Length: 404
Image 1 (cartoon, helix red, strand yellow):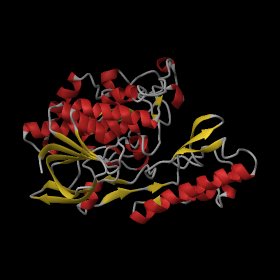
Image 2: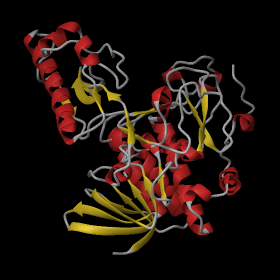
Image 3: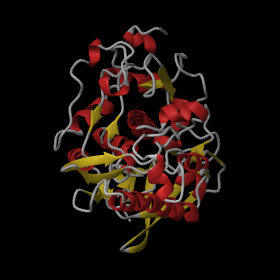
Image 4: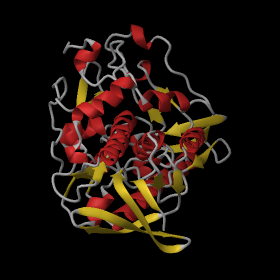
């Protein structure tokens, strides 16, 4: 087995950002993804909204690969960045610096980014085991059509969304509730349409399904909001997928029986091939992002993200939230499994935040390897030097931003 400089686990947008950044920095990089598609929830999960890179008041706050990916997401398919986002004040989500994309088109764009960067990509490859020695991860055990194979690297980035490396090493992680949310691409009224299911991933009603629709499925909005699942197990994943599909099946049956639609005018085009969990497992990091952290200056910030739910709230993201408090010293985390809990987790679990932390983890992995130090010992000045050279602002002051 070849020895890689950087191994990235998880081919969602966080993992892709980490792998692309690492490879562009000259590191021999491999990306391991357990499904046949890259992009994670954005593509396999059909959650096709690249949420805002601006604060809703005309100020862009996320840059670098965030902006590059957003713009690439609509290269091979439909979508438009709202032209007047800079003029908005207290702008709603869809009027901000945002893109709604075709999931399949985004896969092609992400493939292109990985090809251009020269990343070695393993698809349909599942991490089954992790071997750590002398305080470092030495190799991963991967299952794919070749059987069980070993993968060796000097630095690892866990962008799995479920902190799979930490869990395989037996480390404690933070878990939270997930709702039964289902995004489905369907044919409706003569055109493709994204059906958001009864509730979003945070339990807020979508208004797509009526009470009658849900009663016909043997459930209700209130029941679905209470039917949360905490943490993750193999059985829960299967249950999640089957329950959401059962609800969708009953919805179509009701639409046909009631005469509202028929099977030629309303039907599913594409179902998600992964459970649409939002918050699975987060690491215990050196710094935990918590409620009320917006507009808080962070000394070791790797960049900024906007609260996608409301205008005027911006967060600086600490590098130390990507570093585990305990465990192997050559592993960083990115995306939904970084050290963020509560409301901070809601802010950090979406595409822009995942891409930002992925790019930061990829750069830090590469820099720490080149400088011969553990990621936790990496000089922050060294990190900022590289990001500032790439014109990526790191602090509120860099943009002249103040709390409204």
